[in-house]
Image (cartoon, rainbow, N blue to C red; front, top):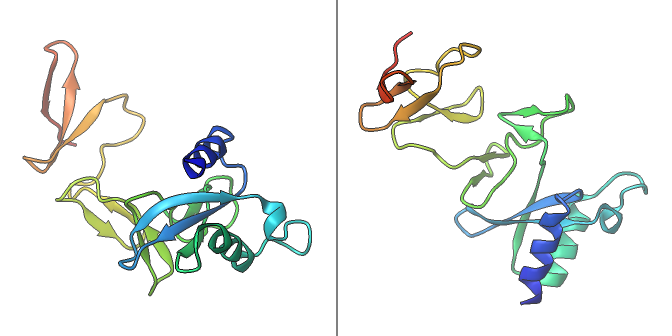
Length: 160
């Protein structure tokens, strides 16, 4: 019970700490945990991933596997202009790619394909253009984007 209360409390603080993904034997992310930066050496020459892993193993068991992840990384870009870290922020259900050193997000639709350049899943038809104000939704059955027509209150195939 204390474990869940601690996790809930940390998320309420928006995890302003170092983040670590717990990885199972198949490289699936089970949960993302936070560790206070002071416990892993911040201000003492930089934070240490090894110290964070050791701390989590002390609490949760020596048999657990952890990989540090960055809350500020998405699609291999740092959201604040810094250096991207391991492609994407880990989330439960995402996958750790140990050969290439990055987190693969959850595949949103069966038909979407992995883009190794953007480090994300993408629709085979591409995305609708940005800035058009068009509300679009992926139609998995048809493998296309549909746009919302407010006048008829229906979705229709979107072409561009």
